[in-house]
Image 1 (tube, rainbow, N blue to C red):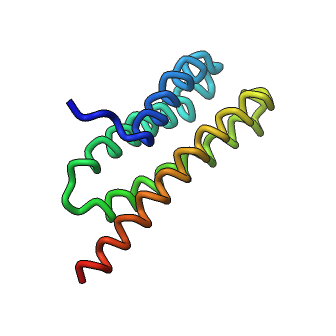
Image 2 (cartoon, helix red, strand yellow):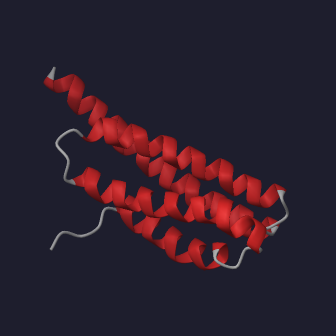
Length: 118
């Protein structure tokens, strides 16, 4: 069995940490913003796992980078709506940034491969 890529493990850990918090949001935010974030998290994890096996990784990774940026903005909204403490916001932002760094590195690697094979 293949070991998980670090980015997959980091995303998995983010989902495990974040979903229980999102499930406790007040009703007026849980069913719109909370559910969108949860769906985005699961889509991000699924996309990263599937990208690993794709022959055309770069387009998939670029789309996932957009999803990650959306997650950053949605998370900031939670903080600005005062639905998340400053400590949690700082922590989750660090997790998201770590995933972004991994994703950026993977995208650069795939871009270099594409250039070398052109």
